[in-house]
Length: 328
Image 1 (cartoon, rainbow, N blue to C red):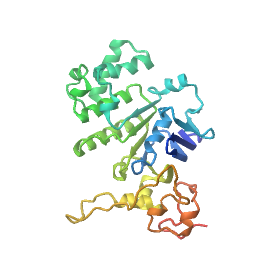
Image 2: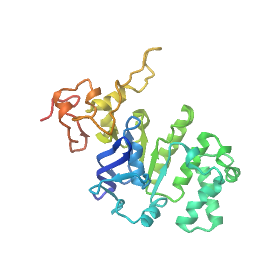
Image 3: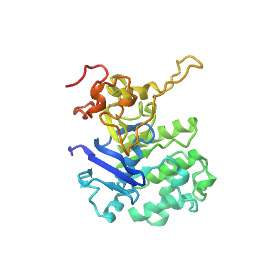
Image 4: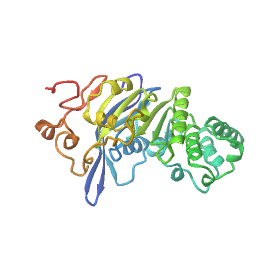
């Protein structure tokens, strides 16, 4: 773990035992996240992004298993070996997460004010009156109108966008050092999505907070994240700073994601680009490069020998990277 890192993930492997077999949801993920940066974690649905987030937060179900060789170092401690009580104490003041659907992450029978103050009182030991004052400040900060009235309302009385803003307020209540936002705009309409993403970016920069923004849309991370890591079938297949990732893509899968972004200059009624085929079953992933069955550049080596993630400031796992001749 380097001196400026806040989170260092080394060889993370998480799998699930199911009646059909063992699902290798996370297979050898290694990531180093610097303090104060925003990392975009991108990939198609089912590639392991949310499992990665829940592993960091300690929220995997009981039937999940993590390889003993895996490490998740956060602020100098391996989260995977911490006692349960110590790890739970980190969630709130040090680690926080925003989930995809606020309607399921918020408690439907608790008032908004009580849900925000709960963590402030428990983790920070604040008196109830002070915690309520802080809750009001947070609702105003995240852009909720008539904030004093919203404290007395229940989640079902708010719109989807307002519920997600409440979820953000709860996540920020104890001033966490690392915030994980897992597809925070999935359940919202397009006009509301931009406002939520802008809010997250503004809060991350104002607090110098580290953030992992999980999304299936590369267009979301452009201009909002310092670095982008691309996941496919449980593995990191490319990682670079955002400018390099967009201007100098190496992995064909990343390029396919970029090509799938709708563009304003496209002729009307033109069919949108899509990635052919389907992601592999992680019970029996294909040999070699897992993207090879869907890749236009695939050759014999790609289907028999798995590429390793190359070290450096621009990491990628591909035998035939775009813009380069085949590697050794």
